[in-house]
Each structure stands twice: as structure tokens, then as C-alpha cells.
Image 1 (cartoon, rainbow, N blue to C red):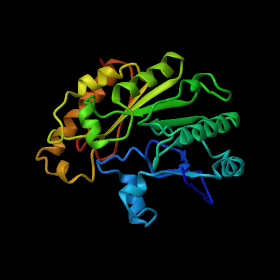
Image 2: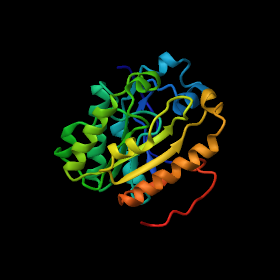
Image 3: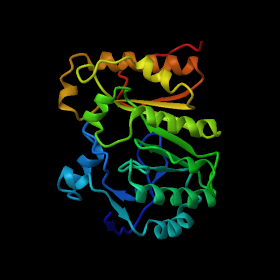
Length: 263
């Protein structure tokens, strides 16, 4: 895997549910085609030129050295660090990426900083026992379907949906906080599916984040987008309240804020 060098690593996120973040890899081999917002932005900025280039990730070779410098600089401001928004920390079948992610999590935990982690890959089981492990970390998977044919079309090189759930369940059973990002959730003209079945498959988690699909030409052709996402947001909220799961509906997903009474 090729390497790059950066001048900075940690940054304050503008994402509504995040704090500080880092991206220790440039690109992502999963090759998501929703389209991928991170790829779109990197291409617009001229950092990558093609989809093929994006799918050949490059490791930030000085990531650990930067982290040593920046932890002391930002430590008093950091609530937690999120891995990652423009790449995947446990990229499927990319051992070099996974190894660096483990070392970064260890270093942050050793400095009293908890992590939130999101992947379309698989969590290594050693996360539950390695030095620096913290029960305050939160581990999450992206899951917008249970249909493997859909995965092959839109997330061609990511881990299988059921395998993701199993790796997350393992960490849950070991006492770690777990969560699911159901974003970008597809419209019915992309796939017909039952949201409740997906929710039931991850009903063991501590938190669910739900968000609509943006930037897709085909999805935008769906006639009842507002009504669709309003209805699904209500279903997510009801399900989470019933099962005592924390939830967050992403901004722009719900055009009508509906108050759901506690059951």
C-alpha cells in the first residue's frame, strides 16, 4: 500500500453528532457507489482524479507521530475522537489499515481519550482484549440493508452485512457500547425492503443513527421522498423508544418533526 505524509491529523468536525475526528488513510477500497460523499469532495478538491485512484487507499505514514503532537495540543478540548468520516478504519481485507487503526485507538485510550468508530468492514476481535482497550469506546457499523445483492451493487468491496453484524455483536457481548449508522438509507426505487427487519437485526445496539440518501440522481427521481423519510424516521424513533435504544435522526432526513410519545 502506498504512503502519504500529512501536516495535520486531528480536526474539529462539523458533523452534527461528532466531536474531533481523524482520517489516517486517503481513499477507500470499499468503492461505495451511493455516491460516496467523501470521494466526491476529494475529487472536487483535486486530491484524487478518478474512482479507480480513490479505491487504492494510501496510508498516512506519519499518523502516529502527528497524533503524539496533537493530543497534547487538543487534549483539553477533545470529548472524543471519531474514526473516520472520509475513509474506513477497518477497511475490509486491508490489514495495514486495520493495524494502524488499532494503534491509533490504543494511543488515544492511553491518553484518556475515548473513540467512536464506524466501519463497513469487520471489527478485529482483539479490540476486546488488547492494551489500551476502553469500555468507553463506541463501535459502530454502517447498515442500510440486509440484501447482499444490494451490497454488491452499492458497496462492492465492503464486508457482508451479516458478517458486520456478527463482528459488532461480539463486541457488544464483551461489554462494549455499540451503534449502527443507517445512512444513506435507500429509497424504494433503489430497493424494496422492510426497515423493521433491519432494525430487529441490530436491536442489541445502544444507539441508532438514521439518515436519508443524498446526491443520488436515481434516488431523487423517487416521487414521495419527503413522505418516505418522514415515515421511516417515525418508525426508527418508535422502535428505539420501545427497545430503549438511543437514536439520532440526521438533519434533513425528517421534514416534519413528529413527537412520539414514550411507550
